[in-house]
Image 1 (cartoon, rainbow, N blue to C red):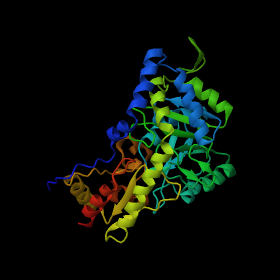
Image 2: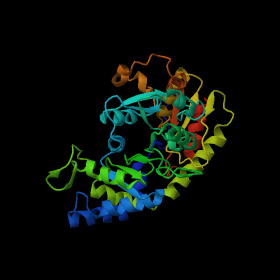
Image 3: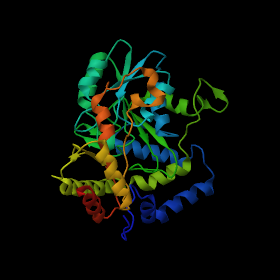
Length: 370
């Protein structure tokens, strides 16, 4: 179908840049003028500001969200044979971070209404080798951290938040990143708080974890050429930190704009046959607005129709972790996680970003009406 209306992307990074261009350009040029590209002044300032925003004592900038999970697991001194419980429905980086640290992911199913990790399934999966629980704050809303922390406390386990999609998300107990032993963030460009390249960060209230993470991100070195252990070259770039500082002060306003658009989606989609709404909480920041269609065939048809109408849409995520080739060695059979598998086959992400005109919601909804 050919349309005259302008395209609506899934996320529009250029539209955001136009609103902050002067400030971003000035921040980048200031770093270029100083030349402190590695662990420069802006990195420390951003770490302090992001820690304060989340309500934690420490924030450690790293090279990516995947590295954040990897290094958080390394800070726990996980060894071969140690197990970390995580949801079967998430982006692969959650599992990659665990495996890169030498541990084994143990997958569990998710909640039918939210796609978030199911605490009851976590409780059943805890065994003698379990060392940590790694919930994912999917689509911008926090997992049930109260239940998960209770399980962890009972069994002496660590909890690491995968908060890569939840910058600014809240629950009654606080903000994402302050709800566990460590919180892991990604600043991939499309995130609610995104850099102009890769970047990540780990939050914690534990000074020992913070010190270890700073060591590990910098080749295992506190002093140049003195390497205490095997670390990574995984440092948040100073240029990216400068960009993120200009964005952080706007994050709450951008999240509010996302909430308003999500509310409009929910209002207009209510009652449409064959469209199942996700259960979103009040503190959600709507990194993605996701619905589920009747079945995979209708989901795929809706995706094609949206694209034909010039409307960006996506699938987050089309393959659960246990069905990925990289994780077949875990030995899970088809049907092992029926809820996760159902989400993968029926979920559909609709466009949402802070600068998106509300008319775009109506355009997307009209396509789903058929």
